[in-house]
Length: 121
Image 1 (spheres, helix red, strand yellow):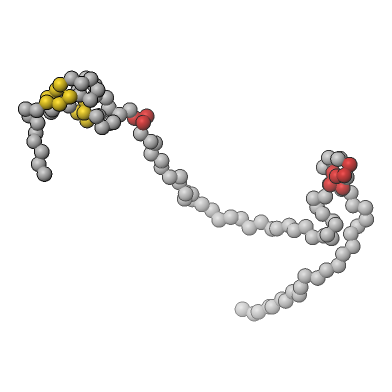
Image 2: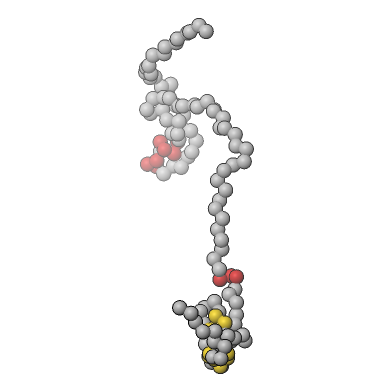
């Protein structure tokens, strides 16, 4: 559908109500037809910020080093995290010094068998 150019038509400003030629009225950012005196462009602060995604890849990455793992193995009552405060919790003593071991723990256990295979090149 074709529209007329509005060369001989008039329109009213939506803000001030004055009569202006239709071609002079402009649409502002709120959708109103306004005269040149009442026209205001949209402020840049009203636009949402453009978010650029975080960089994911690292430049020149290196593989992790494989460190030896230390595992605490002991009797069930022989905890590496036991403290004086945990022993005297009923008396509301908050002492974080390590709990002294009264006697050396005695324990026996077996993990499995080790098989060594030697092949010649």
